[in-house]
Image (cartoon, rainbow, N blue to C red; front, side):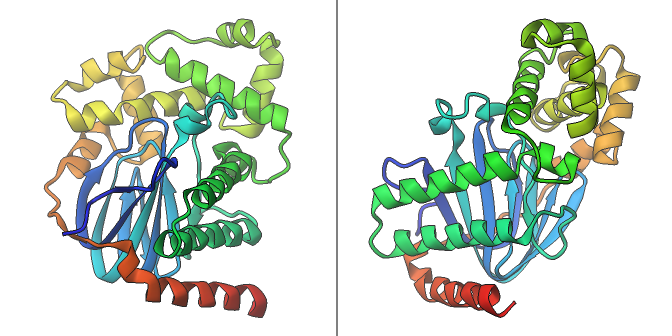
Length: 307
């Protein structure tokens, strides 16, 4: 029986290859990026308030959100699991960065097609290398390119701003603010605190966050609502207790913030993601998938040059 997760040498990359009908709720730890790549067949993917269908050749990234898979049909999928903490020296705030990347026909995000093409090419290249020569230095380079692509093009700020035209200094400031808020999630955080931490005026920070994010208060409410996921899933704490742990001054604000971002109440989320989802999944050796990977590579080049 194949292993559930296979670490690729001493690289930051691990992979999981599987055929799945359904897979119970999973939540990745902070500092982890998972990219689910469907090579054959189809499967449904649910996280937060979103539900997507992944078809052959499509992929989706998930970082801090809980998700589960269901309604899989004659499929073959690979999860690329990247340890982002290996890149902390290069990207100091990478542990708390948020990404949005939906390379699928049902996706709601709009990014330039060339970015999805590049990411898909890198994923296929990684699989080709793993199934053939498996040179860890080459896999290390490919994984680094994938991380660079996410940091520089799939940061959540690009999603909110609606353009790739964001200065790198702005991105770094937004990520520093994000990290500060997560580290002080239980505290009362105000613009004055960010002003002192960043050495920037309150007015500048407020305008920057209004332009490149949903705004200071809305982003803070999202981070707090997101932080509550683990308590809703993994504990029997009451909604009031969870509200306090995540820095909400009143449970009614927690309900309001959660419903805004998740389109359901905390209790509904708890019921949805804690429900008993059958584990119908077969883990496979990725090397047995070389024929499918070759077909995917040919199809990728066909899409690039005949589009």
